[in-house]
Amino acid sequence: MTVVDDLFVETRKTVKQYKAKCRDLNKQESELKSELVAIQTEHTANLISQETATLSERIYLNMQAKGLVDKAQVINAMLEELEDKRTDLKMQTVTSLQEAITKDARVKSQYDTNEIVDTHLYRMFTELTEIGGQFQSQYRAIAPDILELYEDPKVQEAFPTNQLRFDSDSYKMPYWQANKTVVHREDIRWACGGHMPPNIRKPQKEVK
Image (tube, rainbow, N blue to C red):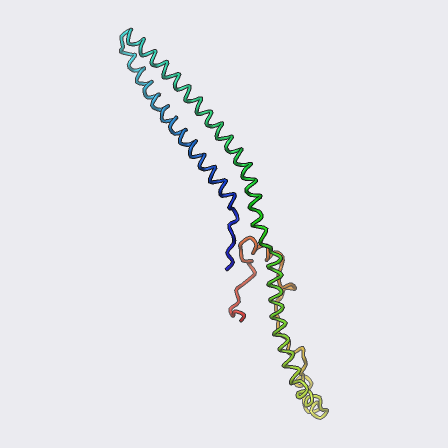
């Protein structure tokens, strides 16, 4: 089984860096939102306290409430800044990602489909040629003795012609494939996509 080299070395580094920066932004966002919830809780308690407070206490509580509102506004502004930073990070990461993908594409280009197909076709035809050549070699070795008998006029007269057939075409490897081509272009495309072509079946007997 062929093990494919890592196709996304640089791409994975870029993604890892992006996620690390995202975690930092997420942490800041979580802390700010927690602080905002605490302020809102404190502000609600302040308003409730004002309902039963004396005049001097209300003055203090109003000053405190104003401080809480101002603090909440600062936090909301910081949350907006965080969103801007998140957007900027995504923009920068996309630029880096495009560069990384371009670098990683060199790994993908090492795998040449045409070369693989041509290599295996050559091996296949080499094996067929070797076997077919041995068929013909054995036929030629014995053919003169057989034909000497079959071509005798008296033998031919005694036996039907179809029984005396002994030619080289009869000793070629049989092939009954219905398709005109051995490898179809679409079958190769299926395989390149990681799928076995639907019309390709594993042979019951492996070729040795």
